[in-house]
Amino acid sequence: RKELLTSALRRRRVVSIRRIGAPKRGADLPALPRVDGSWRESPGLSFGKSLPVHMLSLLVAAATTRAVVGAVVIACAGDSVTYGFHGYSKGDRPAVGGTWPAWLEHHLEESGDFAPDHFQVLNLGLSGATAQDGTNKPFRSQSEYQELLASGFDLAIVTLGTNDAKAAYWDEEKYKADYKQLILDVRAANPAGEIALGLPVPQLGKKGDWPNKDVINEDLQRAVHAVAAELEITKLIDFFGVLGGVEPEARWFNDKIHPNDAGYELLGKEALETVADFERARLAARTAPPSTRPSPSPTRETSRPTPAPLSPSP
Image 1 (tube, rainbow, N blue to C red):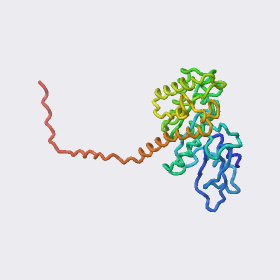
Image 2 (tube, helix red, strand yellow):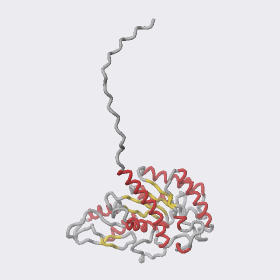
Image 3 (cartoon, helix red, strand yellow):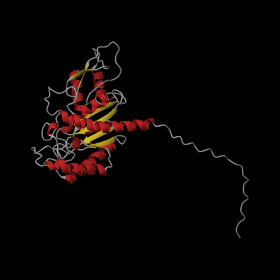
Image 4 (cartoon, rainbow, N blue to C red):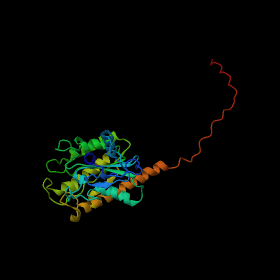
């Protein structure tokens, strides 16, 4: 059962599961899997010793969509910088952090500004993913894209472009056209959700497929701003600037492209401000008092004599 849940959660990239349903009184509470495969104690989930397989399947489905009924879903879609865990081996991943979506969730919980379990953060990052079609891993052709469309997100943070900037792929006009269409398709699938764009992290120096750091540090940033302007997206998360921008700081990087965990924490904090402002505005709109403008008085009918018919014109 643990293996089944772990496999499902890895596919769905749920950052963490806090609670599913109500606790069973007097029950032994088992551990729940993290996205990295480790286990944590849950305050509200009990399988029992003889849970039928079909019930377990239903539980897995619930765990991999909305872990908490009514939770605000923040879907983080992108490439390996979103997927994270750079500098860690598979058997040595941290209980907290390791990815910027995990740090985002951690700081949302620690802020005290919102109730526990108010948010569910989904990590839909995929190593090598591109915004452009025609590469070896277009994001729209991957299961993470389908999960994004089906997630019912309240806010999606989409950050693609680092792999598009490889020398073999970079075409600024094609990137802008394909990225714009991708975002339009995501928007059409969930008109009620909002979309923010992340500015891709800077490149520290020459690395393999990225021989010229100016492509990421200048051309790509310009292109993302252009896509946002065309789509009238006002939420831009500055993952680029927070790591140093055109003069990136080596202390935040695991290699020339990917942040280390300290860098990922900075990215999570950068996203935190946008997410918190988004949710405060959403809650304020929901709780705003009704308009105090008086209703117009009902029209009073008055009895007037019926006018005599006009004589026909000569």
